[in-house]
Each structure stands twice: as structure tokens, then as C-alpha cells.
Length: 94
Length: 422
Ligand SMILES: Cc1cc2nc3c(=O)[nH]c(=O)nc-3n(C[C@H](O)[C@H](O)[C@H](O)COP(=O)(O)OP(=O)(O)OC[C@H]3O[C@@H](n4cnc5c(N)ncnc54)[C@H](O)[C@@H]3O)c2cc1C
Ligand SMILES: [Zn+2]
Image (cartoon, rainbow over all chains, first blue to last red; front, side, top):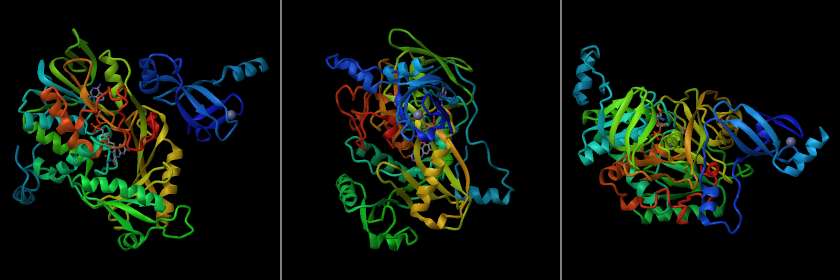
């Protein structure tokens, strides 16, 4: 079991979470050229090593998280809230 | 090399089995080849075999970083079927199944292909309607397909959980009788032996580490056993495709590497004659019984991207729950082993056999859960592409540009999320 330290709930089994996917993607503007959309929707870096990805703590606080994880060892390096606003609140508290 | 025959088995029986020779050579890497296939899994070996057999190309090497069949070729649950209905997939998988039907004879190697039938359980009248549409498409395009009523299913497989108050009561089944299983290692060895016999050089423990290009053309590959000059190159490295692609300086691909697990129980007496599939609401479970008696289970991928060739615990639980819910009599059977393989999940669940931005590089990838059954067809179409430098008309849309054209080949209708394409 991978253990993910949720910044809101503490360390939990990954089975409490739903895997989102590649967290490095930024979607282009709605009127951006088709090619940009093609890249964002279909093309993947598929990193062997540390990558950034999204996880949803569905059976917990229900927050979306950005997680840095090694795709070979499953070691977790960094976890933070996916939304700047919430991340800011967290930071203000600590 | 001696051909296998009833006589050779009989004679070696009389002479203490001392007459068998290694089934393929162990050549040194040469300075150059006409075609180099990277990846000694089923697709690489089958491609080399058909390049030599159908297209008369003789200077071929297969480079494998580990040992033959150490990748997904030796890790899968060996299910062979052709119940795909999207144009292109339909023709591809049907051709592959036909090749399977003659494979042991063609390779002079018993791949233990067993057409035991593939039974997909259906859990509502609507599911029966949807299956009837798919299976009618198969019948209209030269395949075999049946819908079994509940009574017929009970006659064939009496010991499923038919309780009316089951969480998902069984209503019937969709069946392909010509589908079944084969012995995965035997297919690897059979293709390797038959390719070697036609002059293909299989180089194991030879990892491709770099790709040298000049003007949109690959001139040589750097390997752990030295450099090799190439006229044409084919990549057939399944879960490692993105790494090779990057080595060739080609950037990103519509592929993600995920982990898929398989499980086998302790051996029991004959209990299940068919391949049985159970799937509701996207969840996926299948089982068959091996010749040794072990029940072989497969389920969903682990949901998160992974290059580790091992799986995680939630899927163990999932798979065990699925097994018990359809066959409660398995309650006290113990799991013996489970393992994982890195599968190349594509953005629409279909594969790529296509040309690439480099004029002498060809790509074979994106096999998701289903590349075992595809092996003969994959080798057949990929060798045709490499030899003739144009795709066969059946696979013109199995290229990397299909997303740009809006032509996704999405059997499941799951959309552009690789983890959903079971
Ligand atoms: C658990 C599991 C169950 C499955 N069940 C089924 C099933 O029931 N039915 C079905 O149809 N399909 C199934 N599949 C899918 C099927 O096994 C694969 O799609 C198929 O085997 C992939 O093709 P391959 O055999 O060529 O791949 P592999 O055997 O993975 O071959 C690729 C080879 O490339 C080599 N390689 C990688 N990088 C390099 C390099 N740089 N240099 C040299 N060599 C390199 C690897 O070592 C490897 O041997 C399953 C897969 C898994 C993991
Ligand atoms: Zn949480």
C-alpha cells in the first residue's frame, strides 16, 4: 500500500484516494490552436521517475491534491493542495 | 535444427531424452542489419518471424535487454479472443485469431492453444441487448458469436452464483467459442525457434541505450553490447515505449505505462472449462483454469501510473472479491502467487502499428490489456508495414495521428484517460 500524507487528514492508505492523472498538464485557453489542445489532452510525458500527479482524497477530506511520486519506487516526495486558494489557507495556518 | 514429430518424441523417450539440442542459437551482435527489432517479447519475435517468412528479409536482429519472455509476454493471463468491433480492430483481431488457429502447425511447436470458449457474464436485459449488438457485428464480419440464455449458461457452467438476490444477478452470457487460452511461454519459444531457423539473430542481454539520427533517419543504435548499424528499425517494447521514443528524440506519445497484475491459486481438480469474464460498471475480472489446475485471475490495472513490475494490495482484494461473488465455491482456495507487468496503455485503448516522424523507424505499441491475443496479428501486420513501408489497409487508422483527425478507436467509449481502457 502506498501511504499518502494528506495535508488535511494526515498519512492514509492510497486506497482512500482516487488517482486523477498527470498533474503537469495545464489546459490551454479555449481559443488556443487545436495543436495545443491535442497536446494537452492526448500527449503524455510518461515519466519513469519522479512525476507530479493528481489524487483525490475521495474517502477523506475530498480535496484534490498534487503529489510528487516516483513511478518506479512509489516513494512520495511532496504533497500539497491542488488549488492555490486552499494551499494558501494551509500555509497561513502553519 | 530437428523438427519436432511424434517420432522424435518417441526416439528421445528411448534414449534418455539426450538427443534434444538448444532451440535457438546465441549469436554475437553483428556490425549492421537490414532490420533491427528492439524488444524480444511476443510482438518483436513474431515480427521478425513474419519478416523472414512472408517478406524474405534475411538480415534481421531482435535485441532484448533481458531474457526472452521476461516482459509481458511471460506475465499475461493468456486469453485469446477476437470480440472487438471497431472498424480496423475487427479485421485485425480476426486475422490474429485465424493465425492462432494454425500457429502450432506453422511454428512446428505446440503452443497449447485451447479454444475452450470465452464467456462474458451479463447482468441485466440491457446488457444482453448491448452484447447482442456487438456480437451480431462479429457474426456479420466473419466471426463466431453467441448469446446464451440463463438456462443455457446454467447447463454449461452449473456452479456459478445464480442467486436471485446476488448483488449483480446473472441474466445470460455473450460467448465466443473459438476464443480460449494458450501457453504464453510456448508461444515465445515457438516464435523464437522458428525465427532463428529462418536466420533471424536473437540477441539477449542487449539493451538499446541510445539512438543516433541523421536528417530524420536512424543510422545506428547504441547498445550494451556495442553499436549496430541499421537500415530499418522497429520498436516493440510495450511498457517501455516512451523511453525508446525519447531516446530517438521524438518527445511525447499518447501512451502511459501502468501496472497490470495476474494471480494464480493452488491447483485444484478440473472446475472451469471456459474463460469466464465478470464486469459491471467498468470493473473488470476474468478467470480460467490452467492445465496444472491453478485458477488464473486477472482484474483491473492498479489505477496509478507505474513502471514497477509489481502490483499493490487493493487489487488483490478486488480480484478475490470478484472471484467469490461469481463462484462462491472458491472460498477456501488459496492464492499462490501474483505478479505484475508494465502495460502500454493508450489514449483510446487501441494500439499503434505505424510509421513515425523518422523515415526508417516503425512503431508497434499501445497494447493495453490485450497484446497477447494480438501477437500473431501484430507480427503479421508490423512485418508487412516494415517490409513495404506502408500500412496495410486494415490498419491505416492505427497511427499516431488519429487523435489529430478525431478518429479515436475507443472500444469501451471511455474517453482520453488511459487508466480507463481495460
Ligand atoms: C498481468 C497481465 C495480464 C495480461 N493478460 C492478457 C490476456 O489475458 N490477453 C491478452 O491478449 N493480453 C494480455 N496482457 C497483455 C500482453 O501481455 C501484452 O500486451 C503483450 O505481451 C505486449 O507485447 P510483448 O509480448 O511484445 O511485450 P513484452 O514481453 O513486454 O516485450 C517487450 C520487451 O522489450 C524489452 N525492452 C524494453 N526496453 C528495451 C531496450 N531499451 N532495449 C532492448 N529491449 C528492451 C523488454 O525487456 C521486453 O522483453 C496482459 C498483460 C499483463 C501484464
Ligand atoms: Zn484528506
